[in-house]
Image 1 (tube, helix red, strand yellow):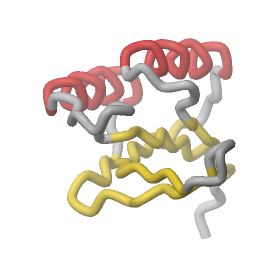
Image 2 (cartoon, helix red, strand yellow):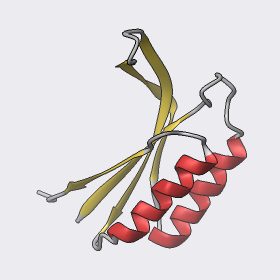
Image 3 (spheres, one colour):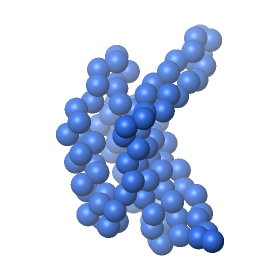
Length: 102
């Protein structure tokens, strides 16, 4: 079993919030494709990183989690590229964990 996590910013690079419809539409399409998901929406996490000019940048993110038996890397890469374009981001993180149910 694979756990796939999509880390999504809540705002663009100028601090303008993305419309809630964007996240609702993404949520719906992922549920239709994978049969369900967990969306961590109520408590956004804060990401921090050092910029090239040594400032500290931050953003608020939400996480969508999907569990699936099969991992279609090409499909996930295409989704990442689409999200980067739609959200005007240099990089969207989509990470995969192998899950063993005990």
